[in-house]
Structure formats: C-alpha cells, structure tokens
Image (cartoon, rainbow, N blue to C red):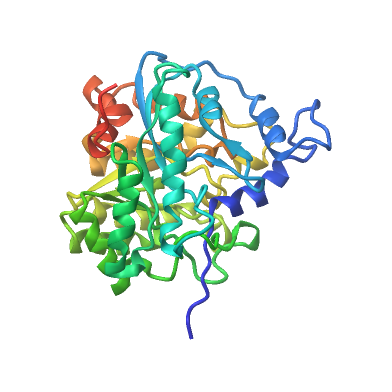
Length: 383
C-alpha cells in the first residue's frame, strides 16, 4: 500500500498562518475586520520599522517568487511589490524559483509548467527596460518539470529553455514530504495538482533519476528542497550525479512543529550531522535563509509585533554560521524566500540580519555570500 503523501507547501503555510496574523490581537488598531489577509500582513509588518543597513552593499537575491492568485498571501506579488519590499537595499538582480504560477491552461499536461517560465520571462523583460530602476529581476529563472517522466522529460526541458533562452537556469522538483502525523494539520496542504507531484523518497526514485540525468545534458542545475529528515537522500543524489550542480534550499528545512515542536536542540544536532556530509559533495552549494516559514516553528507570525533583525539573528545565527562554516562563503548565498517568509518579517529586516551576521567577515567573503556565489552559480550577467 502506497504511503500517503503529505506536503507542506507555501499555500498551506500562508492560508493557515495568515488567519492568525489577521486577527485583532496581532493587527494594528487601524485594521478592520474587512481587511484582506494581505492588508493585515502589511499593517502588521509596519509595526517593526528599520532602515536598511549598508545601503550600498550589492545584493543578488537568488530565491524569490512571483504570483497573482486569490488564495495566496499576498494575493499578488509581482515586480512592483518586490521593488517596494526591497526599497533601501541595493538589490541588483534576482533569481525566480518555481512556485506553480501561471501554468498553461491547456495542451499536453507535462508541458503546462512552461507557462510559468513564459510568465516570468515577461516580468524579466519589464524589469530590463529600466522602468523600475537598476534592479534586474528574474535575471535567472528556475522552473519546474516532472522528472519522474524519465527520458520523456527531455522535450519539456527543451521547451523550458526555449521559453527563456537567456535566463533559464535550472529545475526544481520539490522533494519535501513528511510521514502522516509528523506535521500538524494546520500546516499541511495537498500540493497543487498542477505541480509535479511530491512522493515519498522522491530523490531515490529510479524514474526520477532517469529524468534527473538529463539536467546535465542541458547544463541545468537542480534546486534541492527537502526537510531535514531527507538531507541524506539529497546527499545520495549528489554523489550519484557529481556533474550536476545542486543548490541546497532553505537550510534543508529544519522542522520545528508537530512531532518536532520543542525539540530544536535534537533537530539541530541531527541537522548538523546531515549537513556536514552533504557539504563534502563539491557539486552542492547552499542557500542561507528561508527558515522563517511556519514549518520551522519560530512562530513569528503569531506575535503581536514582527521580529527585529536582532531578534531574527539571535534565533537563526547558529544555523547560518554552521552552514557557512561547512560550505564556506564561496559556496553560500543569502536568500530571501519572499514573499513566503514575508509572513514572518519584512525584506528590510531579513537582509539587515544577514548584514549584521557578517559584519566581521572579510569583504571578499561578504561579497561572495551577498552577490558573487549566486552570480556564478546561476551564470548571471554582471550588473
């Protein structure tokens, strides 16, 4: 009997958690019962204000999303919203990561994912015309493909590249899943039916690996999105395909809710051991960030006021520093994971914590983590 699939996705996190944010106990006094979840979140974020530190420091954000759908929060996150969030920081370029946006409504099922790349290619062109200043959003694009198609995934990869030949860089077929009962119902949502399915032990699946083998042929990287319980499977994948670059997403998704609530020290110890082994694979680089989601268990969204950069840093420092120690700055890049992590903090506060974290690092190491590693791995034009 097949194991029941559980996937904690962005939509599930936001729909379950934003209801808490929108209540009177967390919303500012100006909020009303008629406020949309997006407005409530915006008003809540405004309760913690910080100026952007080191506003001249060049940043490449290698992990964010665009969407325009009614059942996410915010309902709309396009170029204008990203520019507004990043105001004050010297955000030079970004990399879009797949999130199930704007798939084609018809045509062969396996090719519908290409609609997302077409959608983001248009946003990238809009950014490139300079209307929004020097920022070049979606200078790199990572899309989706169902790698369980095996050899049949090759034409899908070709169609993705053709949709954005200057910008398409890689594939994310998310592998984050949990056994039934591990995660609380409030944080669990069925993965959107239009996205490539997540199944137990996806990264070990033979059909998946046949499809994965084609990434090298097309010079594409792979975004490794798993929970901390699956990092060893990502390591196995990296060793089996040493010529394919893997970008380790969101610190490997340390779980802090459900069965893992109140066990942060135990999770940290297990996570460190798994990360140390993964870091021995030279074809893996790491994104540092993306752990302000509900599944990580900090509960920022439940507070009456959003965290400051000092509070974020106090909670995250040990995780960040261990990653940087094991992977080195040359193989690390800071990420925003916006607008998903926007549920917990503002863009300004998020990047301020990274700047505070690295204030005593060398200029070259800081440049690597804020800009150079992402530029190299995603082959971005210098900006």
